[in-house]
Length: 374
Image (cartoon, rainbow, N blue to C red; front, side, top):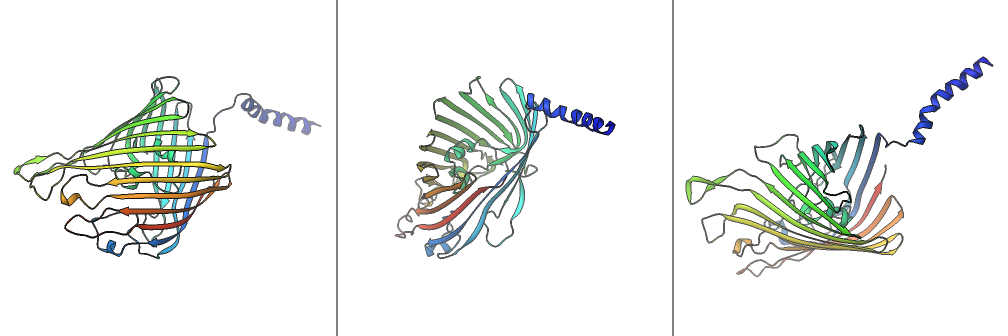
Protein backbone atom coordinates (compact mmCIF):
# COMPACT_ATOMS: atom_id res chain seq x y z
CA UNK A 1 0.00 0.00 0.00
CA UNK A 2 2.88 2.39 0.81
CA UNK A 3 4.29 1.83 -2.69
CA UNK A 4 0.88 2.46 -4.27
CA UNK A 5 0.40 5.74 -2.35
CA UNK A 6 3.94 6.85 -3.27
CA UNK A 7 3.33 6.09 -6.93
CA UNK A 8 0.07 8.04 -6.92
CA UNK A 9 1.80 10.98 -5.27
CA UNK A 10 4.54 11.01 -7.91
CA UNK A 11 1.98 10.84 -10.73
CA UNK A 12 0.05 13.68 -9.14
CA UNK A 13 3.17 15.85 -8.96
CA UNK A 14 4.17 15.05 -12.56
CA UNK A 15 0.68 15.79 -13.87
CA UNK A 16 0.48 19.22 -12.23
CA UNK A 17 2.36 21.13 -15.03
CA UNK A 18 0.18 19.42 -17.63
CA UNK A 19 -2.96 20.51 -15.83
CA UNK A 20 -1.66 24.04 -15.55
CA UNK A 21 -0.68 23.97 -19.21
CA UNK A 22 -4.19 23.01 -20.19
CA UNK A 23 -5.60 25.85 -18.16
CA UNK A 24 -3.18 28.43 -19.63
CA UNK A 25 -2.09 27.29 -23.13
CA UNK A 26 1.39 28.38 -24.17
CA UNK A 27 2.71 28.69 -27.72
CA UNK A 28 4.71 25.65 -28.86
CA UNK A 29 8.38 26.16 -28.14
CA UNK A 30 9.55 24.15 -31.14
CA UNK A 31 8.01 23.61 -34.55
CA UNK A 32 9.34 21.63 -37.49
CA UNK A 33 7.82 22.04 -40.95
CA UNK A 34 8.72 21.14 -44.50
CA UNK A 35 7.52 20.77 -48.04
CA UNK A 36 8.74 19.55 -51.41
CA UNK A 37 7.81 20.00 -55.05
CA UNK A 38 9.01 18.55 -58.31
CA UNK A 39 7.81 17.33 -61.68
CA UNK A 40 8.00 15.15 -64.67
CA UNK A 41 8.69 17.63 -67.51
CA UNK A 42 8.82 17.42 -71.30
CA UNK A 43 10.12 20.14 -73.62
CA UNK A 44 7.48 20.15 -76.32
CA UNK A 45 9.03 22.96 -78.39
CA UNK A 46 12.33 24.88 -78.59
CA UNK A 47 13.78 27.17 -81.25
CA UNK A 48 17.16 25.87 -82.54
CA UNK A 49 18.37 29.49 -82.73
CA UNK A 50 18.58 29.54 -78.93
CA UNK A 51 21.78 27.50 -79.03
CA UNK A 52 23.52 30.66 -80.26
CA UNK A 53 21.14 33.42 -79.15
CA UNK A 54 22.96 34.41 -75.96
CA UNK A 55 21.15 37.75 -76.04
CA UNK A 56 17.97 35.93 -75.05
CA UNK A 57 18.61 34.46 -71.60
CA UNK A 58 15.47 32.87 -70.19
CA UNK A 59 14.28 30.02 -68.05
CA UNK A 60 13.53 27.70 -70.95
CA UNK A 61 16.19 27.93 -73.65
CA UNK A 62 18.92 25.95 -71.88
CA UNK A 63 17.46 22.56 -72.81
CA UNK A 64 16.66 21.24 -76.26
CA UNK A 65 13.37 20.08 -77.70
CA UNK A 66 12.20 16.62 -76.53
CA UNK A 67 14.43 16.78 -73.45
CA UNK A 68 12.46 15.26 -70.57
CA UNK A 69 12.78 13.65 -67.16
CA UNK A 70 12.06 13.92 -63.45
CA UNK A 71 13.28 16.69 -61.16
CA UNK A 72 12.91 18.00 -57.62
CA UNK A 73 12.86 21.79 -57.76
CA UNK A 74 12.70 22.56 -54.05
CA UNK A 75 12.86 20.95 -50.62
CA UNK A 76 12.30 23.12 -47.54
CA UNK A 77 13.05 22.02 -43.99
CA UNK A 78 12.25 24.65 -41.34
CA UNK A 79 12.78 24.82 -37.60
CA UNK A 80 11.02 27.58 -35.63
CA UNK A 81 11.80 28.14 -31.98
CA UNK A 82 9.86 30.37 -29.59
CA UNK A 83 12.57 31.43 -27.14
CA UNK A 84 10.19 33.54 -25.05
CA UNK A 85 7.26 35.91 -25.47
CA UNK A 86 9.78 38.48 -26.77
CA UNK A 87 12.17 36.42 -28.90
CA UNK A 88 11.82 33.83 -31.65
CA UNK A 89 14.17 32.35 -34.21
CA UNK A 90 13.96 30.49 -37.51
CA UNK A 91 16.41 28.17 -39.25
CA UNK A 92 15.47 27.02 -42.75
CA UNK A 93 17.39 24.81 -45.15
CA UNK A 94 16.61 24.84 -48.86
CA UNK A 95 17.66 22.04 -51.17
CA UNK A 96 17.54 22.38 -54.93
CA UNK A 97 19.78 22.05 -57.95
CA UNK A 98 19.49 25.70 -58.97
CA UNK A 99 18.18 24.74 -62.40
CA UNK A 100 21.42 22.95 -63.31
CA UNK A 101 21.37 19.54 -64.93
CA UNK A 102 22.84 16.32 -63.56
CA UNK A 103 24.14 17.59 -60.21
CA UNK A 104 23.43 16.48 -56.67
CA UNK A 105 20.88 18.34 -54.59
CA UNK A 106 22.68 20.11 -51.75
CA UNK A 107 21.32 22.08 -48.78
CA UNK A 108 21.92 25.80 -48.30
CA UNK A 109 20.84 28.14 -45.50
CA UNK A 110 17.73 29.96 -46.68
CA UNK A 111 16.70 31.62 -43.41
CA UNK A 112 18.67 32.11 -40.20
CA UNK A 113 17.33 34.97 -38.13
CA UNK A 114 16.42 36.18 -34.67
CA UNK A 115 13.18 38.13 -34.17
CA UNK A 116 12.85 40.56 -31.27
CA UNK A 117 9.11 41.04 -30.91
CA UNK A 118 7.59 44.43 -30.10
CA UNK A 119 10.94 46.17 -29.86
CA UNK A 120 8.81 49.25 -30.55
CA UNK A 121 5.04 49.60 -30.39
CA UNK A 122 3.66 47.39 -33.17
CA UNK A 123 7.10 46.59 -34.64
CA UNK A 124 9.49 43.62 -34.58
CA UNK A 125 13.26 43.79 -35.09
CA UNK A 126 14.84 41.01 -37.19
CA UNK A 127 18.54 40.16 -37.53
CA UNK A 128 20.07 37.60 -39.87
CA UNK A 129 19.42 35.96 -43.23
CA UNK A 130 15.79 36.83 -43.93
CA UNK A 131 13.26 37.56 -46.70
CA UNK A 132 13.71 40.77 -48.65
CA UNK A 133 10.79 43.16 -48.92
CA UNK A 134 10.34 42.75 -52.67
CA UNK A 135 7.78 40.06 -53.42
CA UNK A 136 6.78 38.01 -50.38
CA UNK A 137 3.25 39.45 -50.28
CA UNK A 138 2.63 39.09 -54.01
CA UNK A 139 4.05 35.55 -53.92
CA UNK A 140 1.58 34.65 -51.17
CA UNK A 141 -1.23 36.07 -53.30
CA UNK A 142 -0.07 34.13 -56.36
CA UNK A 143 -0.03 31.03 -54.17
CA UNK A 144 1.69 28.69 -56.64
CA UNK A 145 5.43 29.02 -56.12
CA UNK A 146 5.45 25.29 -56.85
CA UNK A 147 4.52 26.17 -60.44
CA UNK A 148 6.71 29.23 -60.93
CA UNK A 149 8.44 32.09 -59.13
CA UNK A 150 6.90 35.55 -59.24
CA UNK A 151 8.46 37.64 -61.98
CA UNK A 152 10.88 39.76 -59.93
CA UNK A 153 12.31 36.51 -58.58
CA UNK A 154 12.11 34.60 -61.86
CA UNK A 155 14.09 37.23 -63.78
CA UNK A 156 16.67 37.58 -61.01
CA UNK A 157 16.08 41.28 -60.37
CA UNK A 158 15.99 41.02 -56.56
CA UNK A 159 16.98 38.00 -54.42
CA UNK A 160 14.39 36.44 -52.17
CA UNK A 161 16.76 36.62 -49.17
CA UNK A 162 19.51 38.90 -47.85
CA UNK A 163 21.62 39.20 -44.69
CA UNK A 164 20.85 42.27 -42.62
CA UNK A 165 18.49 43.92 -40.15
CA UNK A 166 14.82 44.76 -40.56
CA UNK A 167 11.96 46.46 -38.77
CA UNK A 168 8.57 44.99 -39.57
CA UNK A 169 5.21 45.88 -38.13
CA UNK A 170 1.99 47.88 -38.41
CA UNK A 171 1.09 51.50 -37.97
CA UNK A 172 -2.25 50.84 -36.28
CA UNK A 173 -3.82 48.19 -34.12
CA UNK A 174 -6.02 46.83 -36.89
CA UNK A 175 -3.13 46.29 -39.30
CA UNK A 176 -4.70 48.35 -42.08
CA UNK A 177 -1.25 49.71 -42.99
CA UNK A 178 1.87 47.60 -42.43
CA UNK A 179 5.51 48.31 -43.14
CA UNK A 180 8.75 46.41 -43.74
CA UNK A 181 12.13 48.20 -43.66
CA UNK A 182 15.41 46.42 -44.49
CA UNK A 183 19.12 47.22 -44.58
CA UNK A 184 21.19 44.31 -45.89
CA UNK A 185 24.47 43.25 -47.47
CA UNK A 186 23.00 43.18 -50.96
CA UNK A 187 24.38 39.81 -52.05
CA UNK A 188 21.60 37.37 -51.19
CA UNK A 189 21.91 34.76 -48.48
CA UNK A 190 25.71 34.70 -48.48
CA UNK A 191 27.35 34.94 -45.06
CA UNK A 192 29.48 38.08 -45.57
CA UNK A 193 29.29 41.15 -47.80
CA UNK A 194 31.25 41.11 -51.04
CA UNK A 195 31.97 44.85 -50.85
CA UNK A 196 31.01 48.00 -48.94
CA UNK A 197 27.74 48.51 -50.83
CA UNK A 198 24.34 47.75 -49.30
CA UNK A 199 20.66 47.19 -49.99
CA UNK A 200 18.05 49.63 -48.63
CA UNK A 201 14.44 48.54 -49.05
CA UNK A 202 10.97 49.44 -47.83
CA UNK A 203 7.44 48.13 -48.35
CA UNK A 204 4.04 49.53 -47.42
CA UNK A 205 1.18 47.04 -47.37
CA UNK A 206 -2.42 48.30 -47.34
CA UNK A 207 -5.47 46.25 -46.38
CA UNK A 208 -8.34 48.76 -46.57
CA UNK A 209 -11.05 46.21 -45.88
CA UNK A 210 -12.58 43.00 -47.06
CA UNK A 211 -10.22 40.85 -49.07
CA UNK A 212 -8.48 43.65 -50.98
CA UNK A 213 -4.77 44.41 -50.56
CA UNK A 214 -2.20 46.75 -52.11
CA UNK A 215 1.57 46.91 -51.81
CA UNK A 216 4.15 49.53 -52.79
CA UNK A 217 7.83 48.55 -52.64
CA UNK A 218 11.12 50.37 -53.21
CA UNK A 219 14.53 48.67 -53.26
CA UNK A 220 17.84 50.53 -53.74
CA UNK A 221 21.16 48.69 -54.16
CA UNK A 222 24.34 50.76 -54.12
CA UNK A 223 27.10 49.55 -56.43
CA UNK A 224 30.73 50.37 -57.24
CA UNK A 225 31.31 53.32 -59.56
CA UNK A 226 32.58 52.76 -63.11
CA UNK A 227 34.99 54.86 -65.22
CA UNK A 228 33.36 57.63 -67.25
CA UNK A 229 33.89 56.82 -70.97
CA UNK A 230 33.87 60.57 -71.70
CA UNK A 231 36.40 61.47 -68.98
CA UNK A 232 39.10 58.99 -67.98
CA UNK A 233 39.76 60.79 -64.70
CA UNK A 234 36.12 60.63 -63.54
CA UNK A 235 33.80 57.88 -62.32
CA UNK A 236 30.05 57.42 -62.50
CA UNK A 237 27.70 55.98 -59.88
CA UNK A 238 25.81 52.77 -60.61
CA UNK A 239 23.06 52.40 -58.02
CA UNK A 240 20.09 50.20 -58.94
CA UNK A 241 16.56 51.19 -57.94
CA UNK A 242 13.62 48.79 -58.26
CA UNK A 243 10.05 49.91 -57.65
CA UNK A 244 6.96 47.73 -57.74
CA UNK A 245 3.24 47.87 -57.04
CA UNK A 246 0.90 44.97 -56.35
CA UNK A 247 -2.88 44.64 -55.99
CA UNK A 248 -4.87 41.55 -55.12
CA UNK A 249 -8.37 40.39 -54.29
CA UNK A 250 -9.56 37.03 -52.96
CA UNK A 251 -13.04 35.60 -52.54
CA UNK A 252 -12.18 32.56 -50.37
CA UNK A 253 -13.50 29.31 -51.78
CA UNK A 254 -14.38 30.92 -55.12
CA UNK A 255 -11.56 32.82 -56.85
CA UNK A 256 -8.36 34.80 -56.41
CA UNK A 257 -6.81 37.46 -58.68
CA UNK A 258 -3.68 39.59 -58.51
CA UNK A 259 -1.41 41.81 -60.58
CA UNK A 260 2.08 43.22 -60.13
CA UNK A 261 4.09 45.76 -62.13
CA UNK A 262 7.71 46.77 -61.65
CA UNK A 263 10.40 49.04 -63.02
CA UNK A 264 14.15 48.81 -62.46
CA UNK A 265 16.68 51.54 -63.24
CA UNK A 266 20.40 50.79 -63.20
CA UNK A 267 22.33 54.07 -63.37
CA UNK A 268 25.12 54.25 -65.98
CA UNK A 269 24.70 50.60 -66.96
CA UNK A 270 23.89 50.84 -70.68
CA UNK A 271 25.78 52.29 -73.62
CA UNK A 272 23.68 52.74 -76.79
CA UNK A 273 25.17 51.86 -80.17
CA UNK A 274 25.00 55.52 -81.26
CA UNK A 275 26.79 56.97 -78.22
CA UNK A 276 29.98 56.77 -76.19
CA UNK A 277 28.30 57.91 -72.98
CA UNK A 278 26.55 55.69 -70.46
CA UNK A 279 22.88 55.96 -69.58
CA UNK A 280 20.47 54.17 -67.27
CA UNK A 281 19.44 50.63 -68.06
CA UNK A 282 15.67 50.46 -67.65
CA UNK A 283 13.83 47.17 -67.17
CA UNK A 284 10.08 46.75 -66.72
CA UNK A 285 7.49 44.04 -66.45
CA UNK A 286 3.89 43.24 -65.54
CA UNK A 287 2.32 40.05 -64.26
CA UNK A 288 -1.33 39.05 -63.78
CA UNK A 289 -2.70 35.84 -62.34
CA UNK A 290 -5.85 34.20 -61.13
CA UNK A 291 -7.36 30.96 -59.89
CA UNK A 292 -10.96 29.72 -59.88
CA UNK A 293 -12.40 26.96 -57.71
CA UNK A 294 -14.36 24.51 -59.84
CA UNK A 295 -14.87 22.15 -56.87
CA UNK A 296 -13.65 21.97 -53.26
CA UNK A 297 -10.58 20.04 -54.43
CA UNK A 298 -9.90 21.43 -57.92
CA UNK A 299 -8.79 24.85 -59.16
CA UNK A 300 -8.00 26.27 -62.57
CA UNK A 301 -4.84 28.43 -62.41
CA UNK A 302 -3.55 30.91 -64.99
CA UNK A 303 -0.87 33.57 -65.28
CA UNK A 304 0.55 35.98 -67.88
CA UNK A 305 3.88 37.86 -67.63
CA UNK A 306 5.47 40.47 -69.89
CA UNK A 307 9.15 41.33 -69.39
CA UNK A 308 11.36 43.82 -71.22
CA UNK A 309 15.03 43.58 -70.08
CA UNK A 310 15.90 46.92 -71.73
CA UNK A 311 13.26 49.50 -72.66
CA UNK A 312 15.64 51.78 -74.60
CA UNK A 313 14.83 52.55 -78.25
CA UNK A 314 18.39 51.77 -79.34
CA UNK A 315 18.90 48.78 -81.63
CA UNK A 316 20.94 47.02 -78.90
CA UNK A 317 17.82 46.98 -76.72
CA UNK A 318 15.52 45.49 -79.33
CA UNK A 319 14.58 41.85 -79.77
CA UNK A 320 14.79 40.96 -76.08
CA UNK A 321 11.17 41.20 -74.89
CA UNK A 322 9.36 38.01 -73.90
CA UNK A 323 5.98 36.86 -72.56
CA UNK A 324 5.26 33.97 -70.21
CA UNK A 325 1.94 32.12 -70.25
CA UNK A 326 1.19 29.49 -67.61
CA UNK A 327 -1.90 27.33 -67.23
CA UNK A 328 -2.58 24.56 -64.72
CA UNK A 329 -5.18 22.39 -63.05
CA UNK A 330 -4.52 22.08 -59.31
CA UNK A 331 -6.05 19.00 -57.68
CA UNK A 332 -5.85 18.31 -53.93
CA UNK A 333 -6.35 14.58 -53.26
CA UNK A 334 -5.32 15.44 -49.68
CA UNK A 335 -5.08 18.73 -47.81
CA UNK A 336 -1.27 18.39 -47.83
CA UNK A 337 -0.85 17.11 -51.40
CA UNK A 338 -1.42 18.95 -54.70
CA UNK A 339 -1.09 17.39 -58.16
CA UNK A 340 -0.87 19.88 -61.05
CA UNK A 341 -0.75 19.10 -64.76
CA UNK A 342 0.49 22.36 -66.30
CA UNK A 343 2.12 23.98 -69.30
CA UNK A 344 4.53 26.94 -69.55
CA UNK A 345 4.87 28.87 -72.80
CA UNK A 346 7.41 31.63 -73.40
CA UNK A 347 7.19 33.78 -76.54
CA UNK A 348 9.87 36.13 -77.89
CA UNK A 349 10.13 39.42 -79.70
CA UNK A 350 11.48 39.24 -83.26
CA UNK A 351 15.07 40.29 -83.92
CA UNK A 352 15.53 44.01 -84.71
CA UNK A 353 15.86 45.30 -88.28
CA UNK A 354 17.57 44.78 -90.63
CA UNK A 355 17.32 41.15 -89.46
CA UNK A 356 14.08 39.35 -90.25
CA UNK A 357 14.67 36.56 -87.70
CA UNK A 358 11.78 35.38 -85.60
CA UNK A 359 11.84 32.92 -82.72
CA UNK A 360 9.48 30.05 -82.06
CA UNK A 361 7.94 29.81 -78.60
CA UNK A 362 9.40 27.58 -75.91
CA UNK A 363 6.80 25.15 -74.57
CA UNK A 364 7.20 22.82 -71.59
CA UNK A 365 4.57 20.45 -70.25
CA UNK A 366 4.83 19.24 -66.65
CA UNK A 367 3.11 17.08 -64.10
CA UNK A 368 3.97 18.81 -60.82
CA UNK A 369 3.67 17.33 -57.33
CA UNK A 370 3.62 19.54 -54.23
CA UNK A 371 3.43 17.99 -50.78
CA UNK A 372 3.81 19.06 -47.17
CA UNK A 373 5.63 16.42 -45.12
CA UNK A 374 5.75 18.15 -41.73
